[in-house]
Length: 161
Image 1 (spheres, rainbow, N blue to C red):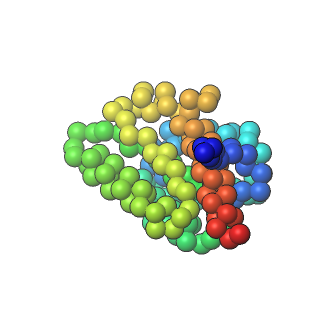
Image 2 (image 1 turned 90 degrees about the horizontal axis):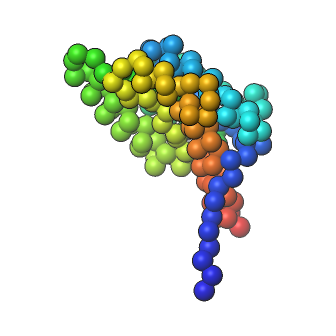
């Protein structure tokens, strides 16, 4: 018996990708967006196949990402945000609720959602994870969403045969 191995491509040609991004901690989230766009472009994505939707903060990402997934217009979605721990428990609430809600969307819709919400202790950690190279979490998210979108499209095509 031969083992079958399935690996998704990270080629963005022909895909439609949506990015929902939080304005809160905008210095960091704009850097994440730059990394994501760089990664998508490196992997053959055309700008006209990328949509960007801004939301107030990380808690608002899930409802917009869900609507984007349900629209049928996207092969994959990226959620970008940054939550920096403060002196209250608000950090814990935002992290738990946003990650839980975002994690349910692909299970509900079948559309890959990659969570690029940094959860850090301080601004320095956020800046180090949103630099100008491939270590930028946004760049990593771009490769992940392309791989998952292609993989899911392959599964859908196989089911329709």
